[in-house]
Image (tube, rainbow, N blue to C red; front, top):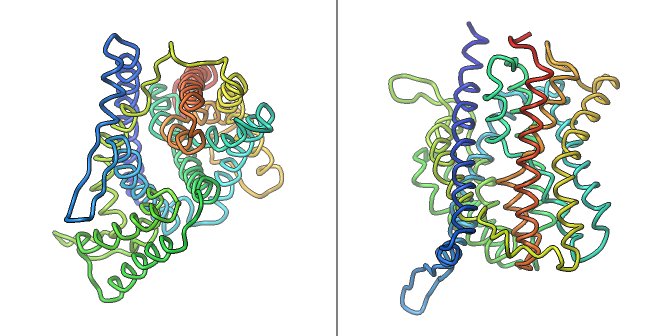
Length: 397
């Protein structure tokens, strides 16, 4: 009964992610269809719509895509931070031995795609894109396992979830360390002030989440001014959220981390991520110029990094961890199941598109990168489904 209680939140989380995968696919197809229709110009014009606020001499104006990619995606990263915090406190990552295998597998799944990409792009103009194929889109990956139904053991879903969360940690670190430009000390000081305010408010015992919105916005604006991508502020605030339980409504003991994650996760998965897909997946295929210097190498590096690099890295790293005694495979999981997880891990999409915007300021190369991510992710999804049908038994082991 205890084990069943522990697995219930995971099942709920995975069901939301599976539904999100369907929405993401629908929005990606709508974006592609719209961008390549006779009304394609209106698609691109929509996301360039200027928005902003003015208060006297103070003015802040950006386009709609900025408010999605840099604003709403901070909420996405906040939920990522909450889930990482929960996992580190009492989840799969709270025990070093249980976390060892997914940690090593995630590391292999990040390094192999980056190395494959760099093999094709050792120098400019594409060298900076090595971080794009490193990330796994958990919504799509979980969606693939959901489509395989009862063939997928419960332990395999938990392994994928733990691997994807560690993968997210790696992606956040890569964005913060390698895709930040011209760091401004003043902005970092402002962001630090927001963090200090959050810690002080926690010490004072302030529990209402609304109180923390102001310091979170200070942190976001500080990172924006500093050159670090402002969406990273979401992860920072998420990691600062208390994970110990408090007495909630109806006498239910629930931690702020879980309460906020359960509140925001459906909105992020069913609104923010699909909106991000709609705003960023619309590549006008006829305008993708593979004749652009470096474009073919970028396309090959990204496509093969996702399609081959992810499964190779995940499987080989997992085998190395098991044989070295560093980690152990969950019961009922073997090489066949690892191959399916590796293939599903090659679905980059949300995070890959996010990093592509940071890695390729050149719009022509960005279009090539986005198309390569879409193709590589689609092929990885197809391979994952085929391997699942061929390699997994019809009922859990």
